[in-house]
Length: 71
Image 1 (cartoon, rainbow, N blue to C red):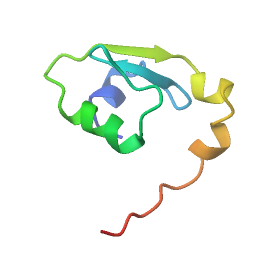
Image 2 (image 1 turned 180 degrees about the horizontal axis):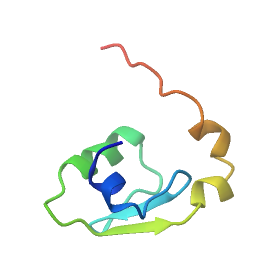
Image 3 (image 1 turned 180 degrees about the vertical axis):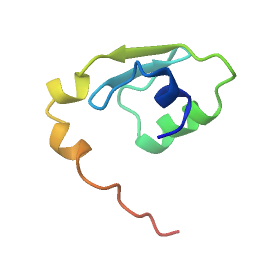
């Protein structure tokens, strides 16, 4: 909450990000996807499957709290 995507309002819970600035997010780890997202410039191109996560049966997973990673 409070970020650029939240302020824009077009991304919703359950949407699936497919590409960020032309880089595919399919089949990569969440950590690698996050790395792509933090390296974007001031203008970002996203390819999104609206409600794609729900379609692929990930809705229950999305409702769970994020795991805490100990390093």
